[in-house]
Length: 175
Length: 178
Image 1: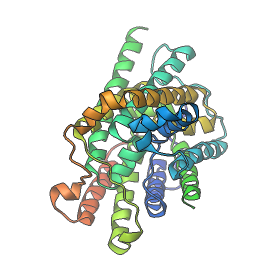
Image 2 (image 1 turned 30 degrees about the horizontal axis):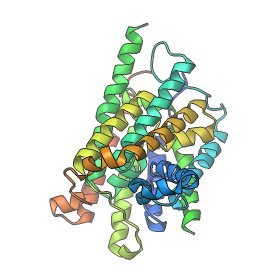
Image 3 (image 1 turned 45 degrees about the vertical axis):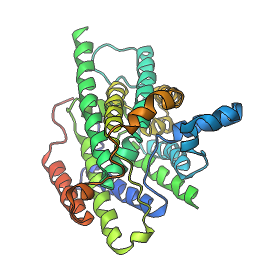
């Protein structure tokens, strides 16, 4: 297995140098338009689709009304993530794997796709219930010292660590 | 103009997330199994640098900052975090990193994105009946650490930011050989 974090070029490890830059980017975002956040774009996408298909329903759903138009800075931020991921990957000698099997033990690609879909469902449902995700609540929220950010992070790491350990236990146990 | 700023911030974020390997589900799961703490240390560094920077800027140019503190409706935020954590531990993606993964050419990231769109759709459909009552429970409003502790914001930022930086400096990155 290759090293998970790129080897440091200078004395500073990647997590530290990239973390400092990311912190400054997040601060720049608050200066330029507002705190970074991703998960709100998902229901705004649903809102645009609903307004195209059934405008009366879209206007009657309080959540879609609350989330508003897709045409805003956060949506462009999400588009930027695709470009940034693409540009970052170009600097790697080896292409990113099409599929990674993150849990130890036996796992198939089909199982991984199902797992990724179910996980996507849960992270978006949870993020929208809480009012933000890793970017909006953990990064931006804690950066602004919002209590919600600390509470959300505690919840995420409690079940995140628990689920990761549980998956390791059942996968390796069933082998 | 704001949209252009959003795009540029997104490109920078996507690039950094990819470079630190946070868009790799394998690396995320190593962090959640507490075998490697690189991403957790990256996030803590980001938050510490961000909080010290924005609250220092706030001393000089408070009118130029677009703060947006999210409300602390305790039950909804905590339950949302617990549900999110199960998905995070299962899939190793978050709503942003799967989008970065798509840019990198990861096929499973598309499944996470599709699941996310369905999750947001179901959330929208049950919002009025199920979610709105939860959101109203124990809603403390847009509170911050400095509000609760009655201290100046810059003091809270410097103390918590420094604490985070000291902890990440002391914690090992590789805990267990993968």
